[in-house]
Length: 256
Figure 1 (tube, one colour):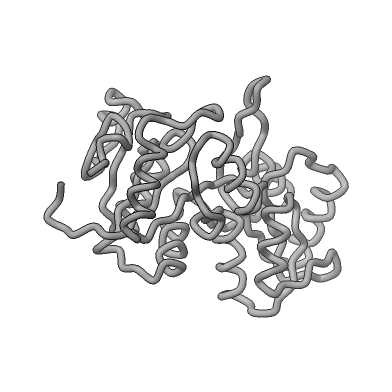
Figure 2 (cartoon, helix red, strand yellow):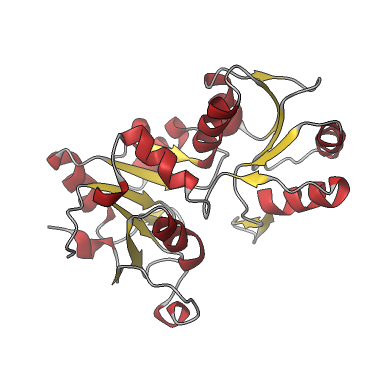
């Protein structure tokens, strides 16, 4: 497969393992293969709404047995980043349980009075009052952090505004750009490797998007695998000046 020995894997979730609440070909078998062999792996998602326990239950419903400690979200990566930046700090947080739980467990105090950071994640109930408070706190000196730059998210009724869209609103009001922790920031992958205790030279990244998964994987020094079960198509690849190391029809092609 490659001249490098790949014995640890990071994989995106939507478009790689599942799509519209259905497991994709080979996904259950690949997860079982990794678990049986004791291969270190993490399933990654930019979605900051859900806790790892929530996501583990969601995957179980479609037949994928992924323990919660094998899940790494942009919320967890953001919490790890904040803990490194200001241990025991404080934050005003806009987000759901996945983000607030992660930041709480990182030892942060959540407050709307002179916080060190304003942290923005996804939520289905963006509050005008909370956004106004965030703008005032950022103007007052709080550092602006966002879990991911995705401008829309999926729903059965169609696209919904996501973190990137609301971040743009706050930026327009404050003239402050957030620091995005999630993909395509390679920090998302580096924090995942730190959790696993592995090195980039021996780690592969499986994704379905050239503009997030592949570019971030390349920048993190990983062996990159693009699967054609999600966003990017074979034709799309020609629009980018970089290439993944491998292009596969699905994760079924990675089965031993």
